[in-house]
Image (cartoon, rainbow, N blue to C red; front, side, top):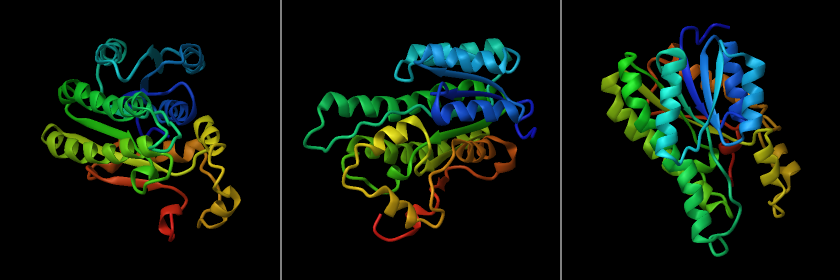
Length: 253
């Protein structure tokens, strides 16, 4: 413990699932954390359990530029600086290209890509003032290999890779590192809900085909994110870190 001592982090989508795990793990590693979500009751409960000395919750719609300005201001007011941004918030819409509405497609891109872009944009000034920092963008293995009926989600997660690389090139001069994390199946409510819609996939056979034949626990992703947020990864930027149990290592995915 103590990997993130003296660091201040802003984490999006932190009220449940992987985001909640990131918040709890960052606090355990010594960081001061501000996190946002639209699920105010759940978010407030997480913050209450962790305590105001270590953690604050803010209502945060990642597609809103004013909400981003507010989240950054709340972070600086509470803890005086910003060292880490974790762009974790995301949504998944299951539909074929033929069936998906334009509104649904745009909504996925707004949350998963535009929200991420706004986070990077608004983190530049406070991180530069702090002498540098680390941005971790949560993509997906669907940002590495396309998946049928996940056109909007996959497109958004592929785009996060490009944004990450571009941001790394632009922000290195300010001491800001930018990397992306690509989880496979993780035991969260969003993953389990999505799995129910894939009637053409045998989940047992899929798991058995993997070198590590199981889904990940959220903490297993959080440990990787914390490493990238910490000074231990000081020479890593513009890079893509996959945590998928080896799923993409095999043929036919």
